[in-house]
Image (cartoon, rainbow, N blue to C red; front, side, top):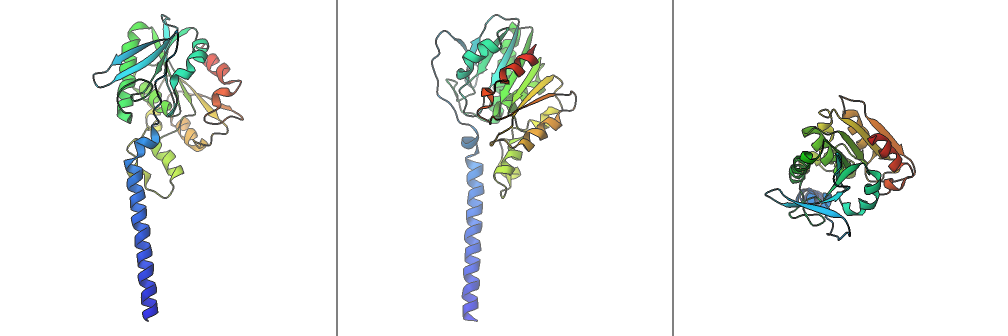
Length: 261
């Protein structure tokens, strides 16, 4: 009897330790989610490339400007650890007929402040409202997490065309794939819910999928695709490339150039 009681107490203690560890892990995921989602990049200097610093009243946003003075324009939102300045050479040629604005999120690449979801959204609206005065039409493009920002913008403003590269449906949905045993619905406050906004978007949309994406499961991209209701969208799946190498595919630029005609 004594031996059984000791075993019982050990089992209870073991369960208690596991429970405490589980709760602690949930708390840490909640507490540090922004640090896990947003990976700010350092400011870089680029010769012969103009930029604008927009004061939103809360933060100062640095925006690289390519091909200034064109009638139409495109606003680009990068991935979570992407320095958008590294797109300058490619985008200057790829979008030669448009002015291109490469947005450094708050906390990224010379912009002030710290990134968080609602801040990124409000900055996107501010950037659009500032530059639309100079152009007849504005398109937007977002890569990975930037797809959530671009989707938000397209749901709130009149966007000419929308390009999403390796996008996902929502941070909650992706989190459930990565952390299957945790209550991500309760933990995640940075929702990044593109799928929830897709049914409000009526603009022409291109979605580029990397066939070997190991970061965003294809199911999460397909969920987003299925969420568009008002317009048939163009979906292109590029083979033999991953989440961070999709732009190396030989057809990547061709697909985008064709869509933007």
